Length: 183
Image (tube, rainbow, N blue to C red; front, side, top):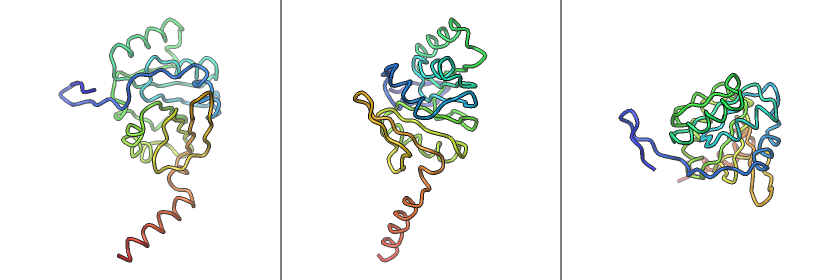
């Protein structure tokens, strides 16, 4: 989807397909969300992950980014109706512009190519120890900490920076580098 906003081209990284509520809970359980966490949902859609993180897992704060105006408006109305404005913040912006430096948990339900476009941002901007939870689509080239199959869905848990700096990963990169240097 192409949209023009502020003279820049915004490209959607995934269509809106809401995660089932039991999958949302499993994602937050896998990340062990608690009252110290600041949960970011990049491409927050209808806000169900944000609301569940705060109401059922007592997350300290939840922050969402949603570029579709209709979803953004409906989500902010839900948050207001639930009286959660002090703990949930939603931005009507491209998730690639998100400031994720405060996130302790980042949830994703993008496509594989969407995750690939987001990977450099996660690598450079997410704090050490942050958890990234992806619904159904892995982050190609990263090592997951845990993968769980649940009701026909796959949930991936990654830890920053372990996902891209584990000894196994370094060993593979080292072998690749040696092969390239021989040629």
